Length: 250
Length: 330
Image 1 (cartoon, rainbow over the protein chains, first blue to last red):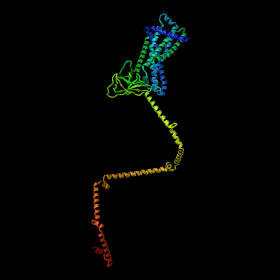
Image 2 (image 1 turned 60 degrees about the vertical axis):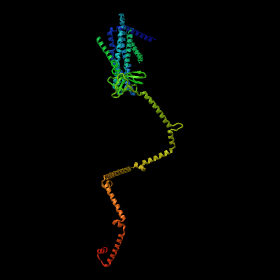
Image 3 (image 1 turned 180 degrees about the vertical axis):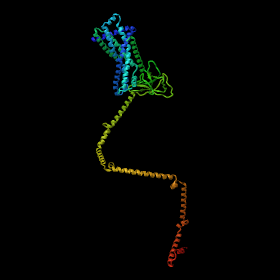
Image 4 (image 1 turned 45 degrees about the vertical axis):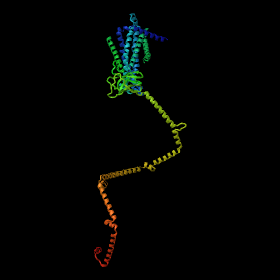
């Protein structure tokens, strides 16, 4: 019962934080430097790990599907399978998990430290709302960077699948055939769906991480607990939201 | 890192994302975002089957456009086709929905139409024809299977029979049971025959087992070949003679083919006939010789006189035979 109350309390705090940030939306142009900095941290520095993970996820997906589909002579559809599954599902989820692990944890740790060491209180004392200065730039940055990370991740995943299809002996599909199959079963709507999902995931991750970070109480030990709590909550939220968003977008 | 560098990197990163999104859109949507090249044609069908927006339009197997959209128009379904601007579609070209794969990949296939036929313009309607889809083929296969099932049932019934009418196998079984003694006897005889053959007994056995018979057969065949060669030579010679006769060469040829010779023979025959007639009538010396006996009588008288004269010579002394003969005769 306490846990359920805690979850609902966290949900309510996140919503209040979102509303508070929305109230300061007009101040965003004046916070350009913070916005750029957060874009850099959330998007640019996350790109290498997104690229590596998506490449190998695409490769493994092509390898596994090639191994299975070879048995019933459907190898030529590997491109379609990899393309659709990466654009609609794997790409956004992988990018969201990486953002939660790399960016979300950093946000929570930073805000929790500021809270524990009373920097947040100092800001409030100076009449600087934390939602305006600390949350709004991050939310705006993640909204801008998630589509970029996702489209790059999807394309790299497709490329990884093409590399495996070309160079693995028992698959041996030309890249032209792979991408022709991918194109024949795909529309841009599929990629758009993936980008929209990633956008939602990213926004929720940053909101949860900011909320948990700003509501940390206690000493330095609580910082680590908050980070763990934020990452776990983000991952669970991603997977739960994934089902409902997918169902809504189908 | 200063703010300017950070801004530049973020800006580039964002532009990269935009560019990749644009490329993906262009690739997957056939460039429909910013341009709408070509002209549209309408193809109406009773059923568009699995055809969907973005599927290819091919003419003689070459991609010339894509399905722009599909829609219902009254009691039929229409596919609006976006055709490349440099491709001309003849007004009598026929469109059909072609299945490219078993799992639902389709495209619109166009034939080339007649050379010199008018060209379709934007918004024109294509001729279409219905092609059987996989479901129709499967339905036909199902019907065929039912017919095969019926035919096999009939065959099975005719072979197995029922309680009233015995089938083929029952009849065969009865035939074998009724004639088992004969079959046994036949098999015994066959066994004996084959045993004899194996031992080389009898004409056939020796023919099979004795190599000398083989040699004799070979020699006979050689002789027959020689005889055949001689017969061939003989026939060739006969043919040459016949050819010579046909050309009128030689006596026989002249006799058969030379008209002059024929006429001569006719004259000879006529002369012979006249001669025989005269002889029969007793005309001439030869006729009289044959038909008149006075010469015979005269000769007989003469011989008698000669006989007497010879006797007289014996009485009167030797005189020369020539002198006596001359006295008697002259």
